[in-house]
Length: 209
Image (cartoon, rainbow, N blue to C red):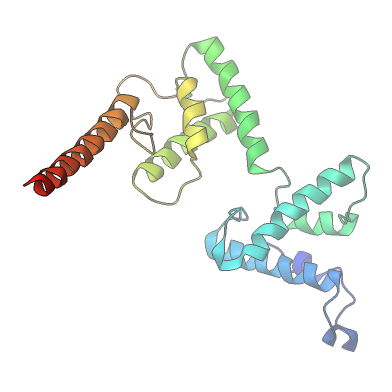
């Protein structure tokens, strides 16, 4: 849970000046409080990229990650030492989900190259994070298959399938969002064209009579 000091600290801004138009700093404070409230309700600071309930918050979360990246590259950035410290105090993770995914995939590829499969034991002491991540992907796939909210995108399904993430007999997601087979698509077109020709013949026959 986020600390009250991290949320409430850092601003001298309880003066009357704050009753005027919000400054960049006060807007930042508002978003930080919203993030803490989001964690209180959901138990997580991982705000989805698309979050209709509060899209400005989702955009702000990604912006903080980008601002830190710019700062680390020596480029102009709005990420101050104070802001970074306050975000870290509430457990904010600056690494984007896409970056984490890519890093975990590389580790999983190395694991498969060594062991010949992707069935990382949940009690894998050598890399507990990889074990938990692999388990999470299976859970995300199950949620996706059942039509529930999931971070398992179609692109990730393909990437995992190419790595043979799912063993024989396991659901590899091939029935989820897959395009129709070319043969099936062609047969549907042919049937539609045949129906159109039949209608045309009927129409010409009625005129001739």
